[in-house]
Image (cartoon, rainbow, N blue to C red; front, side, top):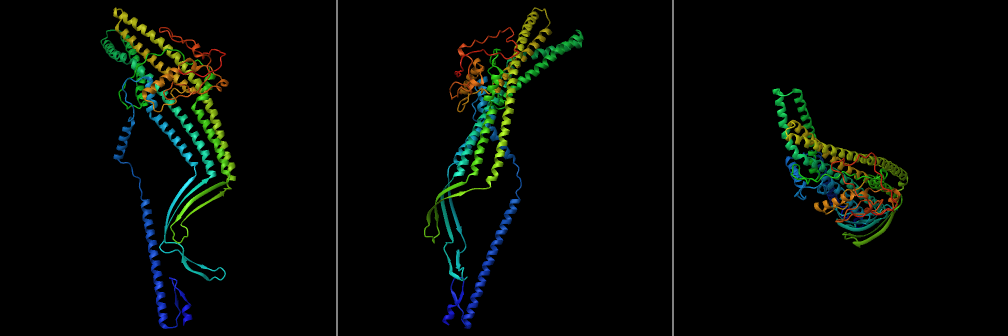
Length: 614
């Protein structure tokens, strides 16, 4: 009986029930087995119900996710966006308190023009990306915290591999609820090398963004000069236009009345009316072209459309050619300074660094780590411990991937080389076109001035004869109309001349603005721009330079508040004080003679030297 009680069946709790021959003992054993079965069935049903609930909840979430519909913006949201944009358009701008000069218009465009501000923000993004790339080179410090729980203990038993019998009673070495945390410092040598290469590429991206900023700012300066000089031309002719418009309207009415009453020859009257209408139409077209530039100028300065402002009307500039350099020298300066070519050079550097990255990817990777750990399991002998080690890994498939990667890099290099050649040819052509346009504009302005002076002299003679009752009023009106047409043509020619000069500077890559404009007010920046342009208009700026001599020259930079200096330093053909004085234009003569070819620079034997400050 005692031996039988020791041989029994293990229950869930780990105790043993004796196999008795008595009926009572068998009954109790049967009841316990039934209870065990019922408990397990209840647990299985509970688990099944839980799984069903999880499935139902998942289906509900899936159905709600599939039911997401596009939601258009409401009128309130659109109105709020419009109000916020309008409030921010001119929020931080200095108000217009005086007539705007050319250099103040350029300063306002550089500071407040939205396109230049967008490019400035893009440049700031590249700087932030470079800062971020620096952090990628640092080791990784990872902190983890976790919680793990279960409904019962994680127990286990052991079975002998030799006899197949159970060798250990069911036991556990883990709590139901466990909290773990660790702090690990790891350093991946290969990732450090790749991060260093990516950081160098990000630094080149910063330089590309700066070249884009130069290009956008240069184009904005060109647009400002074009719009300003056209608007100034309209301002100069506005007073005479308003006075003459009433006079012409009255003359047309009188001519129509004379023709209806047959007081004069109908053909003569119609020809006179046709001349007036033709001159009036040309005046309207020219004035409209010039006056619309005022709206464009306000847009460039980021002024609200319709906001009134006055322009400081300057005197007519002297018609003296500012471009006297050989085309070969201008081409070389363009190839040295243009931001488009510099962008391609930086892209070549980025592509060359991609070759280094491809080589680094071939190498094995060494990872070194060190960290501290904590585990809340009460069965552990040590709840806190340090771990450290090193691991070497090598992706062998990179060996097969590397040749294809090099082919891609080589193909990209060929594309950049061909792009550089295409840009070189295009920029050299731009130099030739800009110089030709400048000299054509110079000739046009000189011819326009002669025509205007001649027409004004004729108008004065006719006015004097009319005052002595020697000529009819119709002839006076016709000559006045022709005088206004000549004036508008001359103003348009002067505007085109200023635009052509700005195009020449842009073609050779000379920045018509200070390189460091951060933190300057409008007035200070306008002064710096004026000094810069006065320096650019000096004859020695377009001095003869040779490619072999330019390599020995040092570049000069500009600091805030300093006098402006050029982006690139070129040798001068002679001392600044040794240059001959510029010829003064004759007011009543031809201004400047038409130039068939580019004027040759004076030969000199002096060595190239650095440019002096303006």
